[in-house]
Structures are given as C-alpha cells and as structure tokens.
Image (cartoon, rainbow, N blue to C red):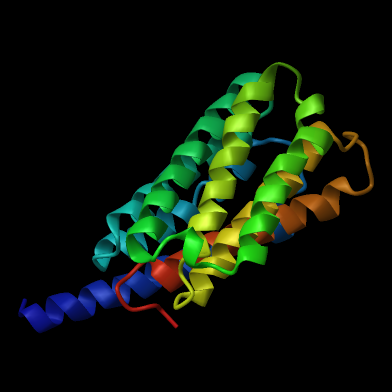
Length: 225
C-alpha cells in the first residue's frame, strides 16, 4: 500500500470505530443502563470506550487520551457489577483516567490560572462542598472518594485552561457531572427511588458523551469538528 492509501485506511477505520462506539453507547443508554447487572449489560457497556480508544490509536491520537479511554473501559466493566470490590476497582481505574486527562489538558493548555477566576472558584467550591453532601455518607470509602473528588476537580480546572478547545472543556465538565450523579446514586439515593432510572440515563449520557467530546475536541492535533 502507498502511504496515501495507509493514511486513508487509518482515517476510515477511525470513523468506523467512532461509529461503533457511539452506537454501543446509545444502545446502552436506551436498553441497559437502568437495568440490574448482567453479562449482556457488561458486554455492551464494555464496547464504547475501547472503540473510542481504537479510533484514537489507529489515527495517531494523543497517547494520554487513548490510555484514559482504556482505563475508563476498565472502570465501566467494574462498575457494571455489584459489590464494594468492583466499586473500588472502578474508582481506581477512573481516578487513573482522570490523571491521564489532567496530564493531557495540562500539556495542551496554558494552565487553569489563565481561566476566568469565577469559574476557577466555582470548581473549587463545588469540590469543597462534597464534604457536606457526599463525604459524610461514604462510610469506609471516605478517603478514596475524597481523593477522587480532588482528581475530578483538577481535571475540570486543567480543562478550563483550554479556551481554544471548547469541545474538550464541555466533555470534561460533562464527565464531572456524570461523576456527581453517580455519587448521588451510590451514596444518597435510595435503591428503589423513582429517580434511579432517569439518573442512570443522564449519568451514562453525560459520561459517554463527555468522553466522546474530549476525544473529538482534543484527541488529535486537529479537532474532529
């Protein structure tokens, strides 16, 4: 194959993998995200992030984004199961994904201190407020959750340093919003609450959509859109 044909093939595969990831994410939102754990739920949930990661890798995307997406896939699989152990595995995987995104955003931007002060303060106040509405209800997971809150706040702050990449900023804060909903579901919302189903749909939509926007907006040297 000529170099031109190789590039064309890689670009084609990029969009194929993106399409597979988006279709799986939509299918999961419509049919699985609000259901109890099952093998099929885990299988469908395990498709979008590896597909996005493949789209990044095949078309020479930023390695930190590819790694963050793969770590998120580990978190997805873990959180599709019940129990404290899968939750802790998922928490660690997503914490590592946030670290990868923090590194990625920091290398792309001028740093969070270049963002408008009200936005910086809003993220900091939101993180500190978790000591009131979240941490007292986390039991033995108190310190892991605290560390996680710090990491998602840092991801939001570093994303604010990317004013030229609005899709990435939107994706980062959609990811942060999905983590907030997950925290409410796990630690504040009764298991049989009528809000569980809409919360699950909103959580997954913000999470998967956020990951796609981060990839589309900052996964390559030139944004997808």
